[in-house]
Length: 332
Image (tube, rainbow, N blue to C red):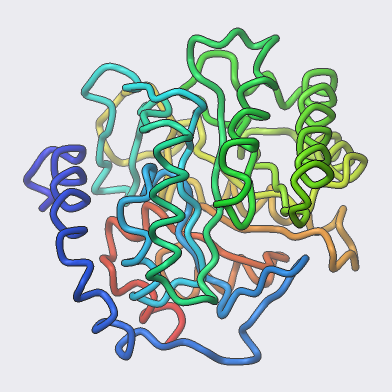
């Protein structure tokens, strides 16, 4: 498969496999990881194990039933925006095989909130009841940064009955200016509007309060990490996803120089550093969830995240290099 353009083969797999949804339940006995000691619960959400699929791999929720069948406890679909958008010009996805990494500058290409909502609700009729479906939300490229909170609020409003939890993506390097929303003033404004929207939905529609997490960049300083953590705590968020992709290119073996976010093995140390700092700040707070993402390829990487304080761990690039059997390699 690595002989084929990465985005082309991705689209082929995600286009063909859903035609065989009828056979997905047959996979379940081969990927059975239900151990009480490995379960996790927060705010009414119950995870049968601590391994999930990170946002970006299944942007449009094409394969939700598949992730359930091969043993993951949860999938984070998206990043989704209120309106459909094509993303950045191609080529925009590059493999760094020597480094076991990927550079992407996809630019939030997705089908839009309304269509994703329908797909999630349809999939929920076929997945097991203990499979958790989160939604990673962002802003449309054409929406001015000063109005970004409108897009996040719209996504929450449209998808509230479908999502089990939400992740606010303000750390992708592929939407111009998005990472500036991690600054104090912008983040305060954004979180205020988002929490107000959630509270309004809970009150008017009589729906339960959904978890909201924040996804941050691996390139923040310790001072910036502490500032973001305190702001998230002040607004009653339920946790932080650490981390998104990096814009750094340190110590790479591959001779490639493309713009975009770098993921995979090269990002592990950066992501681990952010997770370690968050864990120090979090102390014994069991209610504030830390989700570790970045450079998870095997059981050792998974354990590293747990030791550093992760309550849940997610994979993306590791799936590309290790295959769909990565759950067996990590959880068996």
